[in-house]
Length: 436
Image (cartoon, rainbow, N blue to C red; front, side, top):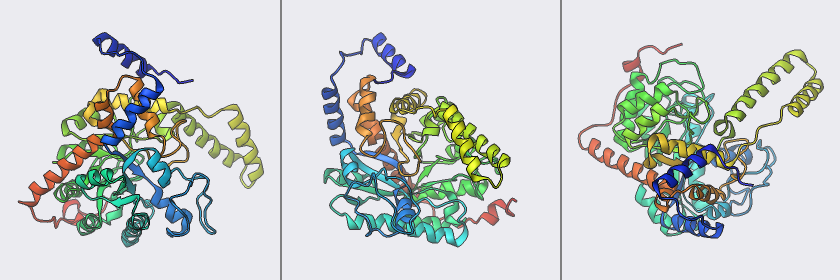
């Protein structure tokens, strides 16, 4: 049974009031519409962590698994650390109509300094080796035109996103090197604050961007690298939007009005994104999608800490106590329809030109029901079609908005490069001594 949400009812009432509500379409008609949209417009997902799974599960070796096979039940190789099946493989990417994928070259925030640079380069290398290993299905993309060309060829445009400002080791030269290696966005901060940007999930250090952080945004604009504001604090979001000369992206974030998680975007920031002509790419992480799941996760973490204190050195008793707690506190369901609610809220607060998709597949422990892997995007578009979205609207969500943002960013870079030299700013010059 399909869940009918408040947002869906409101959308339907608004369309009915305007006289725009057409007769209900059959599932076959909706599927045909979605197929036409995805043939005309590449579906571009803003964030997939498969490269880290290659590192973690397969020891960085692209030849020990077959990405053209079903990886939904793929165990790790001996010595690998991954568990469970994978959410991504080539057959399911094609089944999902994916035309472009930003592969995250994530590294943990605990890796810093020169080691962070080396690990990031190794992750970039994984993406390029995957594209070289499967040339009939994947192709490296560095521009909006590359994405369109590869989509027309029936291949999946593979782009690179750096998922944390700590990965540049406070060096403009490293930032430029990542761009030269193919990175087309950088997330300004990840789970913790770094030396120039505050994270959404850490106590404020800078209260936004430091002066050096603002200079990093300026250099990203000059290079043509998308400024990604997922994971950053609301203050950092506002600072970046105030200084960026190009549209920003949120590569994998939801609407805070739907789930009050700090990883999501407040409505006042969504209004600023509309003025910036950026795009917010809706995330599928269950704790960000559902406020009930967010609260359940917090309760579970608190109970885990309590049991650890009560039963120190007694793992069997801890396990039994947590099983009893879980039986008494069932995990709230999270559904595809709730993801659609986030997309509709982003549209309401920011406009149709602001919405996109950023799943976080293979970077999240579980998914909403109905969005179990990269083959499920058409089901999400179909849900929105049932809510009254036009084919043009669906095309903008799927990838049209991201293509526009990327083209605008490329245009801004050409303009800035005509008058500006590469930044030689250092964090010591602009920020002074490092904060404790």
